[in-house]
Length: 239
Image 1 (cartoon, rainbow, N blue to C red):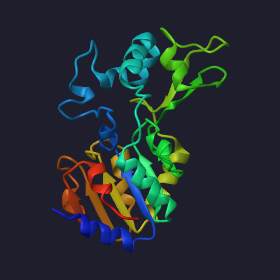
Image 2 (cartoon, rainbow, N blue to C red; image 1 turned 30 degrees about the vertical axis):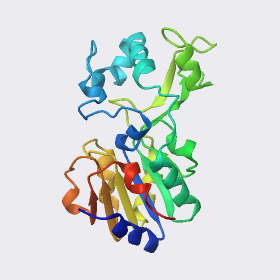
Image 3 (tube, rainbow, N blue to C red; image 1 turned 45 degrees about the vertical axis):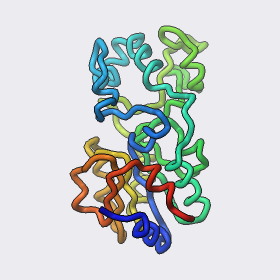
């Protein structure tokens, strides 16, 4: 297993780091991940979470979708943890060029990161499907039943549901950042969700660092591997 000293040396020598993160980055902020023992996919609901969080379910059972969404996806009281804060610090120091995240909680921006590619959207943005008027996450949280716009249209979170495609401009920006980085830090992801997990194949730089609580299919391809909490590792770095 790698050491923090080895990682510090990589950070010190890097000029363009890209961070690619998943749900494990936010678990230290109290936001549940999806696939671990206590994750969303192992909790009991009338429908499996994967079905609830699909485009078809949203269209056909919108009220049921929002019952689950308000209860489990809107973690608006959560704060950035050591991982989020350290990444923002690395960006301010000119070391980190971008964050590419599968998370939808907005905690990277709350910590101060400015160049963030949100592959799966954000719960903080919500739009009327008719007129495109913007609504806040607080509006959704405090609404009842199916949230509707003043024009009467149904409001939809700007998150990528199952069966929906990723945003083209976000994908382009993320891939360009990964392709031009000299160091790629992959953290808090099982690397099993596609197409996002396939993004790391575009990396052409020097060093791949992998930080995840459990082993991943990509461990053997990384230069440094940590099986630990993301914040515990990144929090020890000096910028």
